[in-house]
Image (cartoon, rainbow, N blue to C red; front, side, top):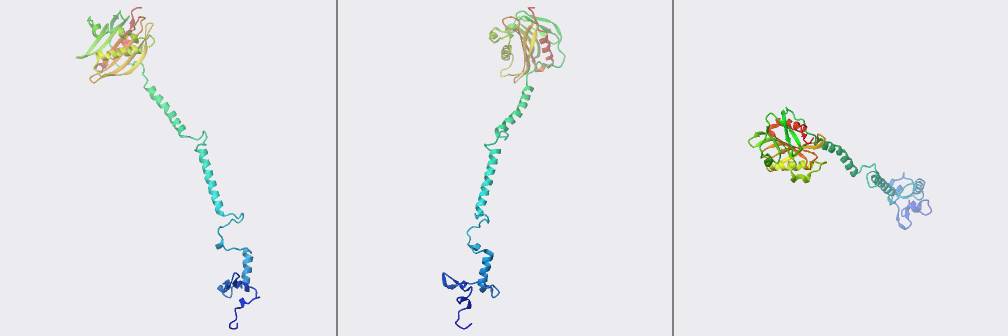
Length: 311
């Protein structure tokens, strides 16, 4: 190449000569792949042909693209990713609403239904507990009952009761009614000031307002309350332990037994009210201190041996 001559690739009319300069800035030359790689790199015009063949006439370098586009639709892939995430979230929300949320059907176990099921499952247990504490009839106390040695009539009450033998004594004093409020009294002394007693008499007139022939429990409760005040220390408590209807001749009656406790003593008290056809019922009151449990079988003896005197 003669000195001072421009390079061959700058000579006009030669194929590819226009690639060595930027048309917008003729003074600045392109650096071609051939110039970087050496003589083995295809000439610029061949490079142009290869680029057009491989990438097409509208080829754009990856570095110049703002967004990677989908091959088929030309839409950005991030749009599909965002749409997919929204769809998944929507499906999850719908599943929650229909299975556990406000749109759940009757088959979905809500907290209210679970509470109801738990209360229903607990109901049989409560019923069983209640039935196990139901007050039953007078128990059959173990031991040998005292013998019957006669009858003790009570004309005012319209009944008679068995006269008990063994350790039992008949109180024949004229002061019985004024002292105890009953017409008849049998007793066993178990301590200096403590007695087992069997007493009978008509219901006191002051309690007559509680009398109902078909419901004798209010009368019995009042008799027991009066006895607690008269015969036992203050502050005593009672617990019902037995109750049952009784039959005396052709008349009806009722028995209720209580366990009484106080700071100084315990006792079993039994009260029976018997309809006799009179204005007030007949009352039989029995008290057995805890120190004389061997006398408990006598309660059933008295219950079974009450007789009406008007027949």
